[in-house]
Image (cartoon, rainbow, N blue to C red):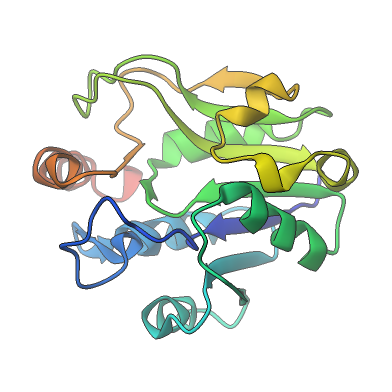
Amino acid sequence: MKAEIFILCAGRGSRLPQLRAPKQLTPVADSTILGRTLAVLTETPFAPVTLAIPKGNHALRDAAAVSRTIRVLEIEANGCIGETIERAVEASHTEDLLFLLGDVCWSRRALGLFLLAATEPHAVLYGRLGPSSATGKTHGEIFALSAGRSWLRALPLSAVQRLWNFRALGARMVQAPSDDWTDDIDTADDLEKIVPRWNAFIGAQGKAA
């Protein structure tokens, strides 16, 4: 399967107003959350990769400049993920589309499992329904969506507020292992508790992380 990957970084980050830089650029080990995602994606046969960013966000645009193959899609930051996906669909060139949340720090294991699930012929959500024994989060999270462009065009995307909503619209849920450290950051508490765990996991596992 040849698919386009969109990394969604166009949110407003309103729950982390204390950050001076986009949360996707939070330092993790020797890189950033976004930097790790881009590095792992360069090892896959999927192309191209497009970074969906808020209009005028120079920090994220500069982050995309690490590779000439990464495209940038600037959109108005409105906090509605459905509208971001709608813009991505309009800009896409293939039927098979993958959407990764930009504030997720991925392990190679988890990203590989999602890319495998994305080869299925129907829409797939990838995430965790319950707590994570690795990061300590007590609730589930959705990390990514794989779907066909035709299917997405038939949906009321402007009404979709969260990736979770795609479950009710027919996407199948594929669960990440509960012991995997892939997760996102939403709050100041996440920054304090999860980022040090990421650093520890990546430091212990090295390039295999």
